[in-house]
Length: 98
Image (cartoon, rainbow, N blue to C red):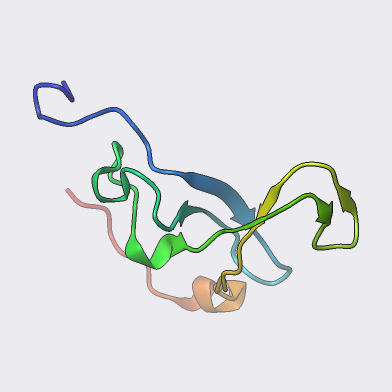
C-alpha cells in the first residue's frame, strides 16, 4: 500500500519515553533526532516539529551522572510539561465523534 502511494516504510530516528510525576497525568511520547533522514516523510506521520531535538554525541569517557562510558553515547535536553491531575479532573470532557 505504501508503495502504491509513493511512500516508504522507513521511520526517522526517534526515542520513546514515558514521563510521570506525582500529582500529574503521565504522558507517553517520543523525540525525533534533528537532522535525521525521513523527518519530512515519517512512515506513520508521527513527526511534529515541536518534538524534534538536537542529540549531542559524546566520546567514551565520563557519562552524565559521573559513570564510566566505554562506548560513545548521546544526550538530549528537552523540557516536558505535564498536566496537573486536579486540572485534568475538573476540565470538561469532549464527546466522542459520532
